[in-house]
Image 1 (cartoon, rainbow, N blue to C red):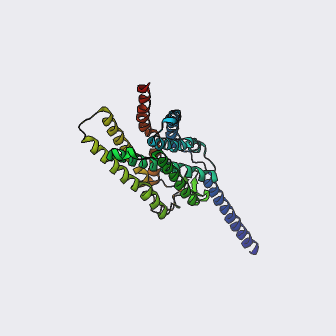
Image 2 (cartoon, rainbow, N blue to C red; image 1 turned 90 degrees about the vertical axis):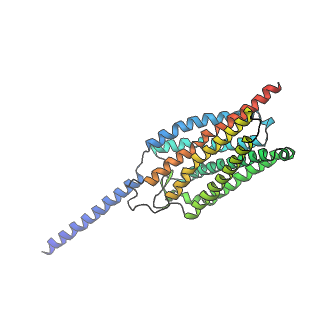
Image 3 (cartoon, rainbow, N blue to C red; image 1 turned 45 degrees about the horizontal axis):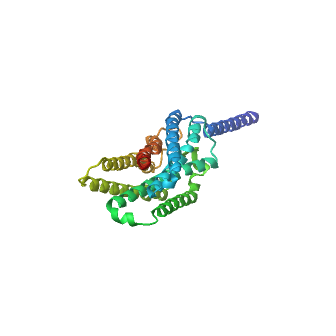
Length: 312
C-alpha cells in the first residue's frame, strides 16, 4: 500500500514538473516568436523608395543653391533633413516587419530617431508657417529686419537641441524590456499620461493652432488683394495644401496615443485590439508626410531656379 502511494505521489510530481516544463516552453516560445507583419513591410517599402528619391533630390537642389539661400530656404532645408533622417531608417522597420529584429538597445534608438524626426518636421513646419505669416502680414517691416538667416539657423538648432534632449530624457520609456516587438511596446505597458500630454499638447495641438491661424490669415490677406497674380494664387495653394497635409498626417496618430491609454485585455498577446491596429496605421500615415513636404520643396525651388534663369 505504501509503495502504491509512493508511486502515485511520484507520478503526480512527475506530471506536475512535466506540465510546468511544457508551460514554460510555451511561454518562452511565445516570447521568442517572430510575428511577421507583411502588411507593414509592404506599406513602408514604397514609402521608403518614394521618400528617398524626393528628399534626396530636394537636398541636392538646396545644396547646389546654398550661396543664394534666404531664411525660408534654411527652414526648408531643415525640414528636408528631418524628413530624410526619418526615411533613411525605414529599412530597419521594413526588415523587422518581415524577419523581426531582436529587442535590443538598437530598437530603443530606432524608435527615438523616428519620433525625434517626426516632431522636428512638425516644429519646422510651424516655424515656416510663422515666417510666412510675418512676411505677408508685415511686408515692409520684415524687409528691414537684419540677420533673418542667422535667426532661422538659431531656431533650427534650438529645435533640434530641445528634441534630442527630450528624447534622451525619456529614452528609458522604450527600453527593450518594455517592447513587444522592436517597434511596438507591450500593450499592457503603455506610455505614461505625462508623456502623452507632452506629445499631444506642445508636440501637436499648439503647433496645429499656430499653423491653422497663420495659414488662414495668409489666405485671408492674399484673397483681399486686388492684384490676383499667379504668384499670389500659387502661395495660397501652397499654404492651403500644407495646412491640409499637416492636419491629415498628424491628427490621427495623436488621437491614437489617447485611444491606447486605457488598459488592454489580460490576454492582449493573443487578442486582436482595434485601438492598437489604429495606432499602427496612423504611424504609417504620419510617415507619409515625408513625401508630401515635397509640394513645398517643388514650388520654392521652382521659384528659386526661375529667378536665376531670368537674371541670366
